[in-house]
Length: 172
Image (cartoon, rainbow, N blue to C red):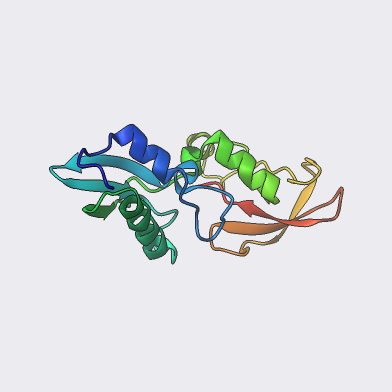
């Protein structure tokens, strides 16, 4: 039996925290930081998402997963709004999400994207190389293999210490 009372936003955030990212199923869409807002607009639950980049092929799948999750909890009227400004940043990832990536073998960003951008403004120099630690052995002696990893959000690196390849979630 479905309750006639509409759930509070805190409860909905909890439900959305169980929705996995389709490309990296060890991290939720909430921990990834792409769910930016949720609110009630009369009887409609409005969920605002910001994709990791504007051409992300998983955006439709994520939107459908949100609708399916909310329908599964008795929320029948759901609207997804996509917001691309401000653009998504790895700064929005939760610490729990970064740890989940690390445990899965993906190196999360170690520094804040905002810190990198502010440090390079006006210097006329290329952006500083990101700080990266191997998710397996924690060594920072790593080398870039390819700017393009298993998804456009990641780059492929190799650890010079343990010699293992790994994806790095690009800091942006």
